[in-house]
Amino acid sequence: MKIVVIGNGNTGLIESRLVTVLRTHGHEAVGASPESGVNTLTGEGLAEVLGDAAVVIDVSDSHEDELAGEFFVTSTRNLLRHEAAAGVTHHVALSSVGADRLPDSAYFRARSAREQLIRESSIPHSIVRSTQ
Image 1 (tube, helix red, strand yellow):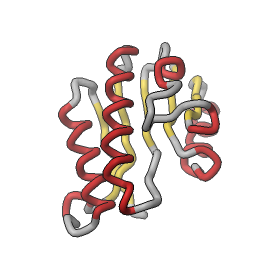
Image 2 (cartoon, rainbow, N blue to C red):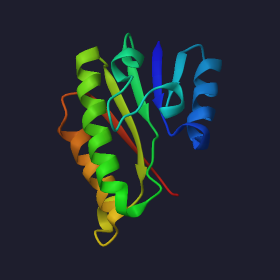
Image 3 (cartoon, rainbow, N blue to C red):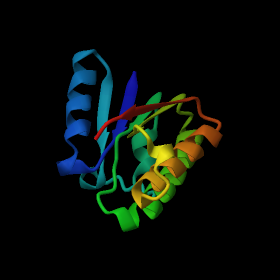
């Protein structure tokens, strides 16, 4: 099964470990990040990398609170649109515990907005919340 892991590239520790684990379990796991020519903010490379993918796991993150809203909303919209066009059957997103309970934080408001976009999409999904 082809699984695309969306991450941040060289700084994406979760992305690289997840790709390794998935490959050891026999999956065709592909890491996708700006370094590999995939940019979720612009949509660049998404159509190509998502071809034949069954699952997308989004572990990307914004490290700047003031830009988090744009990053999470724009990236998620682009990703979900391209997933639907490619026929992806499941979307998994890594989020944060309590994202919906901390409205004073721009970062957590952005995480919560991302979750809402995923819930409203037509693609079956799982949202995994973890602590930072």
